[in-house]
Amino acid sequence: MGNRLAEILINWYLVTLYLCLITGIYFFLQLPKAQQNSKKFWFPFIILVFVVFYESMGFFTRYHIPLNRYVNELLGNTEFPRYNLWVFNVANTIIATVLYLFLIKSWLPPTQKRILTWMIYGFIVTSLVFQFSSIEPLYLDQPMLFAIAANLILIACGIYFLQMISDPSFLRANPLRLLSFWKVTILLFTYSLTYIFSVSIIYVYNINPELSEFLVLLNRLMGILNQSVLILIIASPRLTHLFDQEPYS
Image 1 (cartoon, helix red, strand yellow):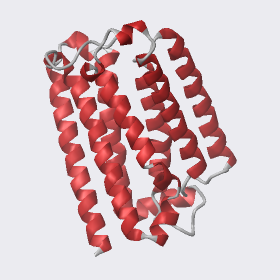
Image 2 (cartoon, rainbow, N blue to C red; image 1 turned 90 degrees about the vertical axis):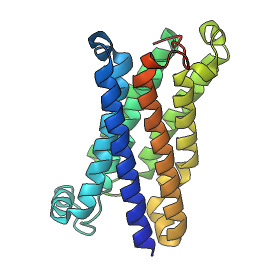
Image 3 (tube, rainbow, N blue to C red; image 1 turned 30 degrees about the vertical axis):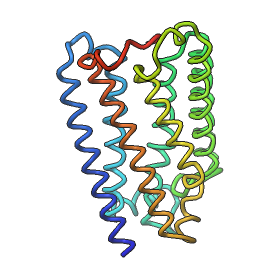
C-alpha cells in the first residue's frame, strides 16, 4: 500500500510540474522580445525549466536501474546501486539553492545584493569542498550540506523581509501586490516546514514510512506553489491589475 501511494504521489507531482512548465512556456513566448531578453523574466523561466528537468531526472533514474547503477559505481557506491540521491544532491541542494539565492538577490537594494553575492560564492566553495573531500558522499543523503543550503535561503529571506520593513522603497509599496513577497514567503515556509525531514530523510523513512510519505507530499505541494509563483512572475506583464512593479529589479 505504501509503495502504491508513493507511485501515485510521484505521478501526480510530475504531471502537475509538466502542466506548470507548459503554462510557463506559453506565457514566456507571449512576452515581447525585449522582455524575453530581460533577466527579470528569463531567469524565473530558467528556474522553472530546471526544476522540472531534475525532478524528471530523479523519476527516470529511479526506474532506469542500469544508468543509476553505472553512476553510483562511478561515485564509488556499490552497496546501494539503486540510490538516486546524487541527482537531488547536485540539482536541488546545490544548483537550486544558488538559483534561488540569485533570485532573491535580484529583488534587494544594492547593499544587500553584495551580501547575497558573498553568500553565493561562499556556498559554491563549500559545496565543492564537500564533494571533492567526500565529507558527505554524493550518492548518500547530505544533511550537513543541505542544512547549510537551507540556512542560507532562510537568511536571504530574512534579509528580504528586513528590507521590507526598513527600506523606503519597500515601505511605499504594498507587499501583497509584490510577487517577490509571495515568492520569498513560500520559500521561507518550504525550507522551514521540510527542514528536519530533508536533513534526515533516510532515517525518517526507515523509522516511520507513513510520516515520510506525508512529508514528501507536503514538500511537493510547496514545490508546486513555488513553481506557480514563477509562472506568475513570467506572466506579470499581463497581470498589472493584480501586481505592482518591484522596488528593485
